[in-house]
Image 1 (cartoon, rainbow, N blue to C red):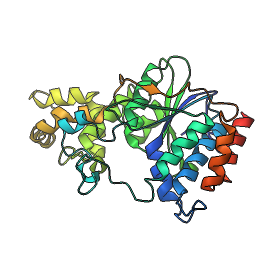
Image 2: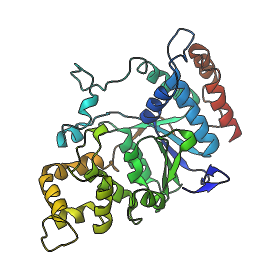
Image 3: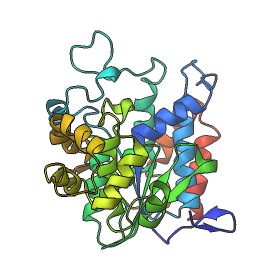
Length: 323
């Protein structure tokens, strides 16, 4: 990880794409529910999320910023490919596939959206897609500015690239103080992957490794290190799969070949689940330029009073003014 005077290296005026649900879930669990509004409503996720935006604007020098939303947290095309996808997160008794969300987080999400709207921070979503797909699409089509993706989800490591504009992932899996800024070189070094097309290599490794938190079983007997080794040796997931049926390729051990053959049904559908979309039909509520001041200051003041956001929202407004 590149550092500069103890801080994460940064580029000038990036387009920052925030994985909103990942970040407000993380804020909810990181901060105590004793943070409440005057009426007793918990606002720990709201305050943590707003503080994260202020940090992004201040420390990452974002000139453009989009909070990317889940229009569908468990898209049908992924469930059709792999029914176990996020199945363990469906709320008990839900008939519409609703996600199980803590009772005290649910009412905070509309407050977060109200704050974003009043301040003038752009949001984006795509019908039938997750926030990951919104980020993947916006990153893929960006040809002007460098891109930074802010997330606590490793799935988005696959979007890193150098051209036509660099895309980096600022990973907050262990909090802001231990944030990791990953580009192709850092990703390749972290997982022993080929640096050429490191993002695609990571996605291939993720297919083989699986991810229990998303209901992806992976290939039995192939863990992260073996998955990375296979991708590095063969160059891509497809090359690994091609080698399974080529008995002349001695780079693939009998044990690995057997494991891959036994997982053929899973491997046929897993890329559909793991790969983020790059062609989703994005709907944005406004242009993505970071505003110099809140677009609706009266509403910001009302939200601050109503929800007891007296330290977080002023900090965000100060970040806007200092840009």
